[in-house]
Image (tube, rainbow over all chains, first blue to last red; front, side, top):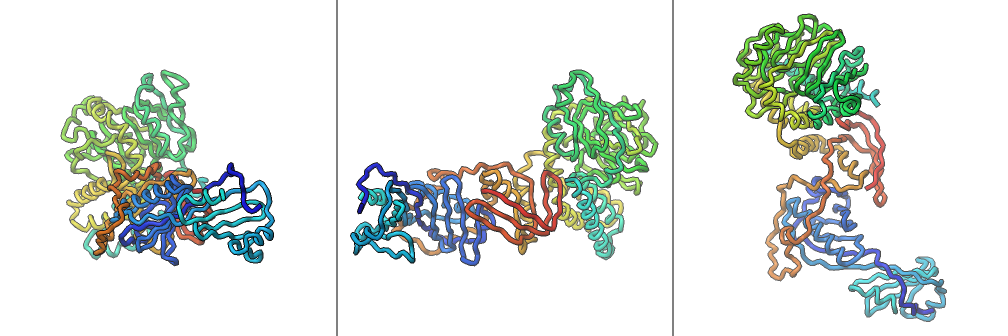
Length: 173
Length: 466
């Protein structure tokens, strides 16, 4: 009721967001013209570059900060980020791969049962918050792990987390 | 699909007309003769035709097939690659030699279907027979182009190995040259092939009996090179002379013209000696030529510009021939006649339109193809020199994740360097939309080169998946 006791739950990481820095200024226009698979968004001031191999979309800013999204695991995120840096290097920029940090990991898992959100919220009063008008799920924040869990009435749960590897542990709780 | 080609041809010709007319005054101001301008125009048109980027607008006047091809028994061994490449450029080429080969081992006779679009390439070792019964054996790959009716053949110098120049094909009306040796043009109103040799005087109509003697002649300096030039009957004196044979052996595409009148040209391409020397090259060069031919059309404007600049060098008529030579050599520099048709050419061309059309949205059909096929396109081969170096941010306490190891450790971007397509669209965009990996394009006012052919559109809608 309150939490799933089932250990054999499937929890799948669907998205890993990571950032890194190239420590050099990037000329977005050059990247946009000569890079492959790029989308230039001058109004925002960034270039999106999509990689196929690790399926990754990276937002590249001219300051050299790059946000890398869409990976399915942290390792993949790192690999993709390095590949990306390699591409930029080939384009002629003096990139240095630094400050790689996984910012967010999103995982989903699904309970085999439905959940009564209101009771759930009442039981977990300080930790859980529920605003049905805003969002149809209960938001359950675990402070010491910095994780956020969203519990839907269908039994699906999404876990977003800043620290590594914890989402899996989180779900087990 | 082919209904496009008419308007495209017209459009291009009108462009040529416009440019030439506007340049006329400039040219005369520079002190160049009008002849130079006309030469430029011929060159331009001939290249356009040669590039086969569009249908020969005169192809409508092609009458029924003039040729019956007889494949020699040994055909199967020769030029397998050439046959493959043969089919490509001929825009409507319906025949394919491998098919023929299967039919009969020995003599296979094959009629070119009516309405076949010229130019047509015929691989070596084929015996051609015109409708009137004239036989000629082709020992080298041949390009059969069509000449307009009523073209007078210009003088035919004694043959030799001459360089095949792609640009060489003379006007759209006219045609092509031939190579070597013993070729004979019948004095009738056959189209005007003329091959120029630097040292050779232009002798007319070498009689067939001299064919045997001719083969010996080609041993001269021109040696391995085939020089093909086309001249035009409208300007009988007009002759492009190739002063220097290029040091590298040039491909040996012969082009023969079939006049719509059905005039026959006797081609006895003899001279095995010189031919055999170039024979090994032709298969390689044919492919190169084809690639160049496809690219020709795109370079027209640039070539015209380069030509005009080249022609301002020497106004004198005597030097004019040399000028054209220089321009040819420039052209040949632009167009790779041998060696791999590298990416550099392609990117150079695409670079130019990028510069010109900065303000336009340029959709590279390569990317579109890549989208459709789900392959990554080639990585940026041209490394931009605009590397923004680091500032003074030499942080001593850089995190240890820094070393990229210059790619040794870091995985090379495994770009499936796809097929470097030549399909390009240059246009403006109305709207480009993307959802996840589905793209939708609304384009306008564009020119595209697809499959070697040019198309022009005022509106285009496309969808692709990445």
